[in-house]
Image (cartoon, rainbow, N blue to C red):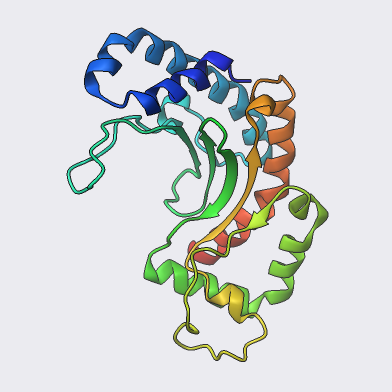
Length: 216
């Protein structure tokens, strides 16, 4: 579980997103970071029992809190969240992701913004194996927790597909992400690990379908 102080630090950081404040509260940052790393270490054995091919080093899972502001209009130097990527070893595609942010935490699995070749392969896999994909995304373990995001989608049919295709809305997707929200109170409870275990089990077939599509 996550300590309340960890999310409290992020809340304060949003209101004081500057290097001076951060330097004065570096001890709070280090304490919060240690808490998140301990949480990751607690989660990894649970995830690895479901998918043995996932990253198992907490420090490699935790994303940097420092923002790259070189090409951004937003010059705030720090992120307002902790991003945790459980990548699949030897694969830069599908992954599991845990986002910690006060009031906006969530867990997700899938493939965000795949490159053209991978996107083409995923669409072909859905087209060729529609029944399997619908069976996975319609399974109770999946639907009881996850929602398949439709935000990142083409307005027109992708090249090679007709608008009359029965699964055209799936084929128009540019990202394939299944996610579910997590409340702050859930993060503070010891039961969150078991909750995430059920999530890993529910989204595992979805991630494996995408992995199979892009790993030739």
